[in-house]
Length: 172
Ligand SMILES: [Zn+2]
Image 1 (cartoon, rainbow, N blue to C red):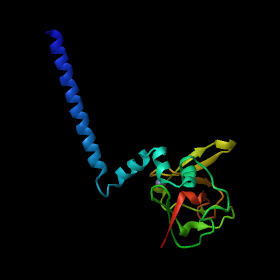
Image 2 (image 1 turned 90 degrees about the vertical axis):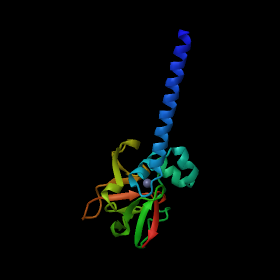
Image 3 (image 1 turned 90 degrees about the horizontal axis):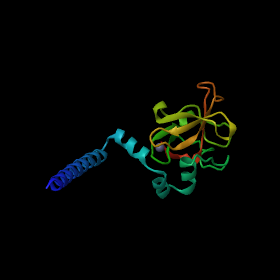
Image 4 (image 1 turned 180 degrees about the horizontal axis):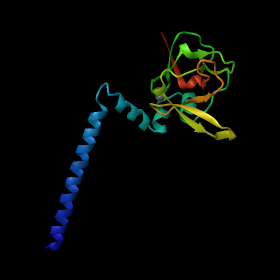
């Protein structure tokens, strides 16, 4: 008899747990579907796993943005682009750089003296390959973009050296 009561209690607890989990899941799902909720989009992009990105990105873009690759100098599509417009993240579409701050650095990579908005990017210390560098990533989705060096033009003194493959240019 005691065993039966214990079993019932256990089943009841289990049922309550399942209902509660299901309810929470539904709430979370509803939130992610809300239109115009940029905070939620941030979470969605950031939570995307590398295997998800691999399905939707061209292989070169995947390698550079998600595996921290670097395109060969003078081979990318934007190092010599002089059109006016906005450079968006190739992964999530965040507006990262503007043609207004693009300059010819002679390096063979698109170079900018500043990001479109400071909040659009994140700068992280990178000591790979025995070098002390500062990595630049997309703040919204974590895509690797390139590196920033303190040898840029006078206004900011910064040179954001960015892979073309990490960017998606939109004419203005
Ligand atoms: Zn992004």
